[in-house]
Image 1 (cartoon, rainbow, N blue to C red):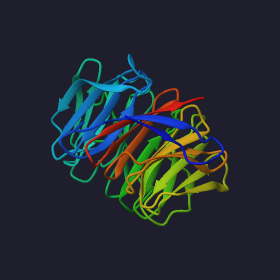
Image 2 (image 1 turned 60 degrees about the vertical axis):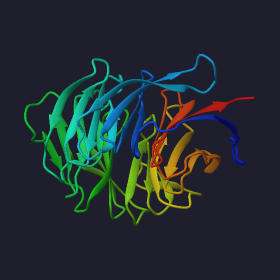
Image 3 (image 1 turned 180 degrees about the vertical axis):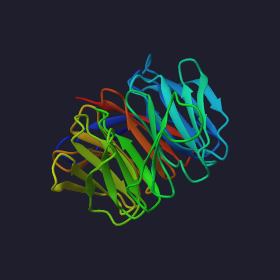
Image 4 (image 1 turned 30 degrees about the vertical axis):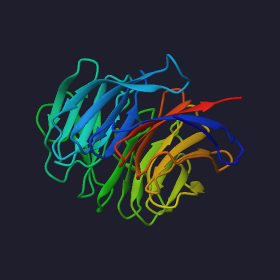
Length: 318
């Protein structure tokens, strides 16, 4: 565990981190922090692990393994949880989706839509739908309670490999980011395209909405994060620069005002969105950082890396 001083910036603060080495036997590509305070990580070692962040003896949580889910063939690519933290949808390299009940430690649903139809996933906040981006350019919408492997709806915003998908917190919008840099925002009910957001020319690896569902953050292989105002046709608000390689993951703080990013440059960065500045950089990971997320209050972040570790960071005041 280390105590690190943040970079200079408007919100320049300190973070205390705790990195769980060998959390997985292989690269950790996915991680999330549920609203009911569970950390879930997914790995190329074909497991999904649930961790309890324990803080009895220190400010920064230590991760205690609660359960392990197996069955994902070839490794876990992405994960997304329902807003109550009960359900978690996971996609794996074999093209299948698995929806787990984290509380009952059971498999709710297995979906086999085909080898290229489900890359990254996003679960609707209410937990009844799962959106999956496909290599063919579709966003497939699956019903958690539906029978069979066919999607309930298919949105076709792109003709390129969809690398990222996200639902807005209010459940009204679904966004997709493609390999060619295109970002589309669609209405969840009608499926109609609402916004086509520009600014990237390389693969958009990650998407995250603000708590009020008005701002969409897009993380890209061009090493930038763009803030988009999805409520306005004008679109781009600002561009965040500072990473030295691909931005693989971005998460907007549930408290607003901040975001956290993970990159191929092995760094985790926290940004002040008001000042458009990086206010903290972690150099703890020894390989690229595939995924980042916040806890429900926005006071802690979690990251997962190719080094097989899962790290928690806690903002320290004073």
